[in-house]
Image 1 (cartoon, rainbow, N blue to C red):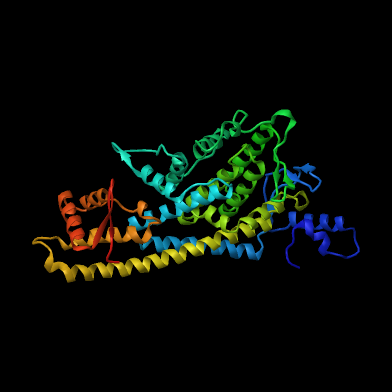
Image 2: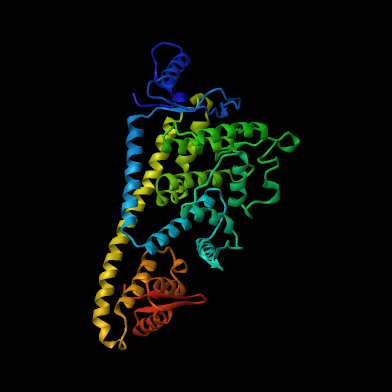
Length: 433
């Protein structure tokens, strides 16, 4: 028999015994299995009649299907990193920025929050600027949100040791995104609502599927146990990331922005433990399977399933792997195009060198064109592409004077190999590939 949610198990087994006895026996068999992975996390689960319980600990069984998916996830991550190592630094950064555009766009879109990919790209560019050698944060909408992701991109993992750390991350991630009445109404998190109202999570048809903890004291208790779990290495990292994602969403500690916060935490963790390309594809992957994703949460929150996250983990792994495979395809294709572009640049330079002014540095010509080729092939949009001043600085670090790069850019423009696409800041695009 295939592995079934406990809520459906009673319908599948008909041996003459009381169905509830069958379910209880199956639950005890799973919970006490030799292979079980059991936690000290007790989520608040909801029955169909909206009564609740928190007596069941989260557990899962590493089924052969899950072990195979976990192996595939790790192999894909290694494959992505191997592909990235074959690419120049500029190409990697451009590709990551393209993923980041989609990640921010889709994590907002899942919640019905509308943003523009062009707007996101502009903020990424502004956040990348330095003033007097110091990092800056765009004053535009999403400036703080994107900066948090970019720090993850630069290898600065988040640390959550206290309850206040959750709030600090939340404030940065959602800065400027929430109306005053949607800000936390407790000390750190949400607290009881006025007039006896309660926070509910409903299905698309309006049916209440979950009621998270009602007050801040219960939220703090739940998240305190989550912090212990997050900083304990007993559970393998990949499974821990997915369980943390579920438990955070189940606790729903804020009035708004829980989904965006939960996806950011998962993104950051995967980026740190595995690879940034997969980490920056979490919301993109979920958006592509959003109905399945929500259905999995409903099943996992259902009290009759007794905090068994086996099928939740299996499903979410499959969702993430699908996006990994797309990243591998896109990286492989872009690498092949970049290799072909390099050949084209070498051939074009050789064919046109006789028309260049005396003492033109062919190495500088090729390097400048190669920067622009990386930018064109790996950028989501031209606005995210490399700027002239960045080319000048990069060439300077490689021993080419700034004036020589400027003359080279003028030469290549006159030859039609590149064209001006922006005056402020000055930016060119390669035309020979």
